[in-house]
Length: 147
Ligand SMILES: [Cu+2]
Image (cartoon, rainbow, N blue to C red; front, side, top):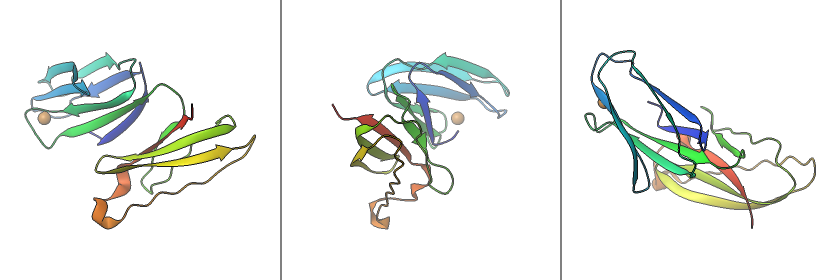
């Protein structure tokens, strides 16, 4: 189970049990339970449409407490999951003023205000102090327009 997944709201989630062990997939969005399904068979698939409401979906297996993931969903196309090197790219953003939000599972969220001109490319880097948490290898970034 990847620790962080990013998706559009309403996207189709597919979960596969690759183990010959019973797992369950227990998901909630904030305090709203979404689904809780047993996956007893190796190779078993479960598909579910993600909610239309954006947010961080907590996914866990009640049988194995260390199995946990977050699915961050967005109601706009301006988001990215960082790669193994911590790089990300968000393309085709219209010019305007934005808030760039850096999110990490175990680190404090950071927000950067930026202004993007027509055809302009910007580079923004975020670093956390080691004392603030652990490796930033599974962070995601999203951009939202300022209203
Ligand atoms: Cu499990």
